[in-house]
Amino acid sequence: MSHLAREVALVGVGYSELSRVGQPHPKALALAAAKDALADAGVPNADVDGIFEYKFGPESPGAQDMARLLGVHDLAAFADIFPSGPSGVAGALAGVMAVASGACETALVFRCLTRVAGHQGGVAAGPRSVGGRDQFLTPYGYLGGILTLLGLKKQRWMAEYGRTEEDFGRIAINARRWSALNPRAVLRDELTMTDYLSSRMVADPLRVLDCDYPVNGAVATVITTAERAADLRQRPVLVDAMSYGTGAGADWMFHSDFLYGGAINCAQRLWQRSSVTIADVDVAQLYDGFTPVTTAWIEALGACGTGEFGDWLGDGSRIGPGGDFPLNTAGGQLAEGRLHGIGFLNEAVLQLRNQCADRQVPDARVAVVASGVYPQCAAMVLTSS
Image (cartoon, rainbow, N blue to C red; front, side):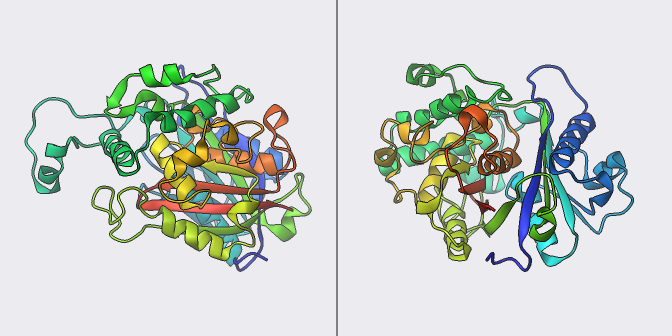
């Protein structure tokens, strides 16, 4: 029995084409993913009465835009969640809560990103004057933007726990092992440790292969009650538990826990609410916008103790095909393409429906999904029905 007021199920997943070239219109991408998800579920457009999305950047259409595109006449619940949410899964969490509370019966959640938008957050160059909080950060190499921030966090991981670059490299290599089995992935070539260690620095010690891969694409998920899901096209995947977390002193730089942010608090709440434990997880889909984020989630969720990631990971085989902790089985954002969170949710659904062909994890019945970073964390446990 879920901790939610009503049992909630994920019943449809959809994707647009993922590409690295051209400039497709964001509305076309989002609509393609939405139609694909609704068709997968066997839900008519007119039955959608809730729409939610994580709206980071101007390129993505909003909930009302999607309603017009689908011909939905009225929405009982909707929201465009702006960047304070836990990445793309923010829309899915809102959709789950709306269905669980009875605010709506069938929610469509989506995220659309373009390749150009994926390049936002670069490193500032050249001399500049700084004031406010930046005057305390610039002397330590923080020049603004997510890349320098994650470079500092990777440096802290290495200094705090004696973690090597190879530990992070094995996350990137694992993404390619899985993406080679995923026809939808945009990066499918094998990656070696030599490739990783020779890749260029973007914010020392953060390498380009530590970072997710910008694409043109959209992804969507259909959410409804477990009762209604029983009559739909696909085997329902149930939401067993969900949680958010900010941690104390929620801030990207001046957080009380610089390495984990809100992930540990989020994970503790998740397992308190769940009917299963980390030992029951068959497949893990953990945010990999940057490799240090993935390693933080693995420790926070309790797959290993804090600071023990390197010893736990070993040669990396345990997180790859055939391993005992299959991680990011579509290739994640490092290899399938940057879909900002919902891609992990959809892959978990497909795994629990036993629909992943060559990359299918045998007998997968429990999945954990974690999204967002530092003061913007969220996680879900999904189970097969």
